[in-house]
Length: 304
Figure 1: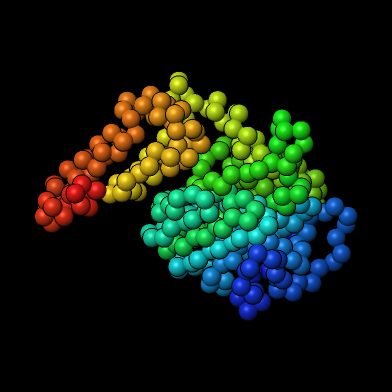
Figure 2: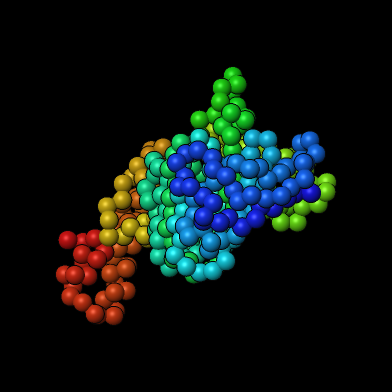
């Protein structure tokens, strides 16, 4: 039977500094061998205020899974940096304000992130601030890098994983949902299934980083659906700014050359022209409701 940790208490947590820290004391019977259990120490995302959330934590060999459910709607901050990989699965999350940052990637202010995934490799900082519109529910999966499967085709070498922010992957999402449901309603025979799902997640993360199968998701020579959504969302969020080709290509997980080619096949124009066209359309919308001068309107959409 999977065991659930009690609600985290702010008084029992020291500030997270990259090491593990104790959870509130819990009385447990000694578990049978190999059964997933709540451990006394584990890597964890630091959440403030900690009494605004309920946290269920289950650990097995090489992996810890945590389901975080907000108990009320108020401004929250999340922070993590540790020698563990972190996968965040946004089961329910929409915000009226805030941003999310993973070290090595541009900061994102995307508002509705339900169904999105974020990955911070070991040692990379993850931080997030949000004023939620709904009761946030996020599943965090922590992986021990030493127990990750090797990179395919690299002779058993450990996989070097790249950071990813608000991406989509059907296999990862489906597996994570099964894992969350198992934690919330696990039965006495759930241990082997829990470990199997964790192994699938680890292998899929390595597969995703290898890039081979992902590149095959291009539709008719253009960008895949998840790539189009990621790129368009980023452009819409940064209409008034200069958006670099390198940033957009990184969001789509493609080289700049292949990104330019596939973007044009998908949208019928190069990225910079699409960006300018969206600025113009946004300006037209603002002009229909004149509340400021044309000059200030131009600055608001990036035209000087």
